[in-house]
Image: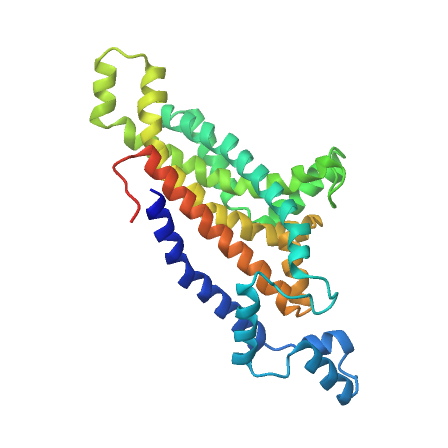
Length: 306
């Protein structure tokens, strides 16, 4: 198992390099200049040239990229062009807030999506199935930038139950977590329903029932375990989408996490911060998928990591 995990981690390196190269090229080739953002377009040519040299932007792109990789190999993400603060310290400040938000959103998605999917499958073509299907279809049709303001209006402004922006008090995390979690719960509901319906028609389920086992035992110990295999895969894949969704949700709710830091750095053309944020999100996505593969193997020993 350990050798297979190490082999998979080695296979991740080309993906990480591709992310670094693509992010670097996109940031430097699209229109916009951090020097213009910092000094303004009316700044003197000499001042612009001096600042460009201080930031290392006067060098060619290949040289800048190689220098970036050298520093990254030593664990140095560089410094923010605008604040001068070490990028690693910025990440250390913002990343815990994003992880806290993503984990709570995942818990909400699991607590809502799995029970609804199970109920819909066990009561297929009955009113609980119809209600669960309509609920999941409605949530899946709501993008984060629409669902977030809707929850703010309902629970923040009209009912006055929850804060609509910022990170304090502690209850401020509820609305952004609901915004992220509801979207994922809709996918989990539909996936759990379809998977469980398929498993319930399998021979091993009929055999378990023929042995006289109780229906709850058949569902919980046999059918549900097999039905969770594709659900685990979806959860792993959607975890990456969850992190990407924080970019919009954190901006809408004023949540000082990694997503908002990424948006701010793009607006300011802060290359080191943007590259570091994208790298952290990409690495998290890859590691979550690796954990998904391991969990998949634990649930079904017939599956082996390749």
